[in-house]
Image 1 (spheres, one colour):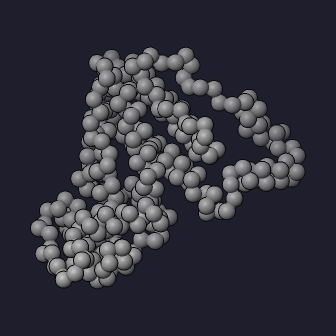
Image 2: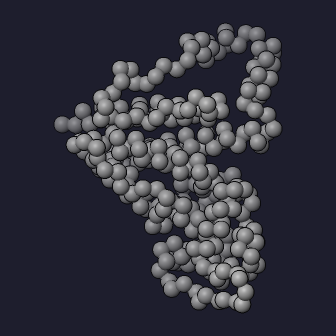
Amino acid sequence: MVIFAGQGDPHRSLSLLWRADAPPPTRGTPGPKPRLSVDAIVSAAVALADAEGMAALSMRAVGDRLGRTAMALYTYVPGKSELLDLMYDAVHAELPTAYPESAPDDWRTPLTTWAGDVLEFSVRHPWALQISQARPVLGPHEYAGLDTLITLLRATGLEAGVVRRLVGTLFPFVRGSAQTVADARLAATATGSSDAEWWAARSAALTELVPDFAERFPAVSGLEAEGPVEPYPDPAPPPDQAQAPAPDAGMPYLEREARETFRVGLGVLLDGIEAARARRP
């Protein structure tokens, strides 16, 4: 399910995101209930989405977590659309905004670390992957993440136009990898069958029903016949050129494959950046 951000009133939504307006007066009541605030509502909504997914999110469900009615929340957040914007921007505050160079002209290590951080962040909050990048939230933490990546890419010395396109390449690449990891974690629970069970049943059926599979799809079959993926790159890069860490062998198969694809794909992308730097006049 794709969700488009920015569906609420523009002025009210951006005022909340940037905390441009004074917060509404806190209305306390006798008893142990904590007082409401925009931050408390957003925190409860994030915890709900992390635990139960986007389908469980509603103003009523968030109110239940806070021991309040949905109507009590509307004084602080106009509706679910604005709440989604606030949630998405709030979780981005978890991401680092600075990646010091470990050596002069070492742009590769910070970019590798950044990509790994964004991957793990997205896996922690898989609901955020459902929010389309076609309509950005335009909040301060989202902008801080963009500013961080641009700063890292400017360190490569590439032209502004190239940096702009690399931003549009790296963000979707990392988000796509995170989506695959998140889906791999959800698959067994959602379908009731493990990766091994699913592949065993369908591989057997495919072999029986399509005995000429190798002849019909020679490229696919040939790639599989060549054996396991070799480590990338070979030979190993210099110590100051970091790579994303290899996946843990104890992970479920699909997640391990997704993480290895991320590691190798990131290495190829960074090699491409290095090649572009070498072509500069």
